[in-house]
Length: 324
Image 1 (cartoon, helix red, strand yellow):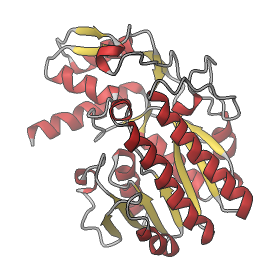
Image 2: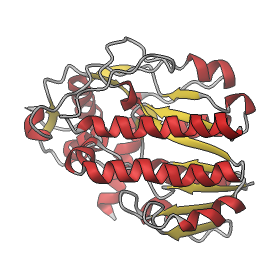
Image 3: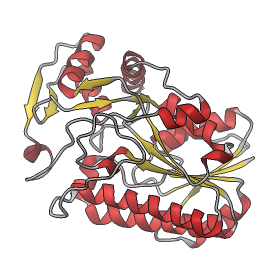
Image 4: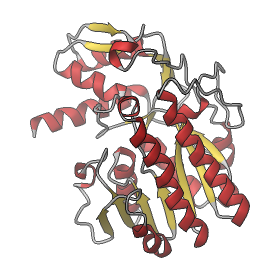
C-alpha cells in the first residue's frame, strides 16, 4: 500500500507517517512547511519507503495529479491550524483550507482513490449541546468575527467531499478532530497543552485565556492515529463523517493546575482577556465534547490514553528538546 499524506510534516502527519512506515507501508509526504516542521520527520527522513516533497498544494496544484494517481490512499491533513493563526491571517486560512482541499479532491475523484479529509470540532460553532454529534445542526458565528472563517472553510471542505462522493462514488471519509495533543505539538499557534507545559517547565506564569471555565476534551495523537488506521480500510465509512476525540472533559483553569501539579512547577496562573490574547470581540465555545458512538460502533475504537499520559509525554518531549 502506498499512502500520500498532505501536511505530512505536521504534528499529526509526522506521527501518522512514522506509524505507517512501521507497518511496512510506502509513504509520500507533500508539505510546504508553513506550519509543519522537518523535525517531525527527522526520525524517518532516510527511511527507504519514504519520499518527502516540499511544495505547496495551493499555489502549485499541478504536483498533485501524478502523486494521487500513484497512491492507493490519500490522507489530507494539510491545513491552516491554530486559533492564533486563524485570527491573525484569515486570508491564508481560507485559501489554504478551501483551495487545498479542492485541489486534492478533484484528483482523488478522477482516479477514484480512497481519501480521508481532516476536519475539526470547530465546525460545530457556537452550539451549546453537551455532546456534539455528527448529524447535529451547526451554529456558526457572525462573519464580523474572523475566528469563524476557519470553521466555515473546513465545513466547505466537508461539503466538497460529500459532493464528490455523491457524484462519483469517490471513497471519501471526513474525520472531525477534537483537540488532538501529544509530543512534538507546538504551542506556536495557540495549542494550549504545549503552551502550558512549556511555561510550567520554565517556571513562567501560565496564561489562561478568558475566565478558565471553558472546558475541552483532549485526545492523545497515538489514539487518533489508531482511529485513522481503523477507518482507512473500512468501506462502510465511505461518504460518512466521524468525530475523533476523548470524552474526558476538563476546564482550562483546571488544566493549568493539573499541568503545574504533574510537572512539579511553581508557576502562577494568569488570566488573560480574550481581546488581549486574540482580538476584540473574540468568541469562544464554552464546551466541546464529541459523541464518538458512531466510530465506536463501526470499528470498536475508543481513546485509551489519559490526560495524565498526554501531559507526561508532552513534558518529556519538551524537556528533551530543551536539552538538545
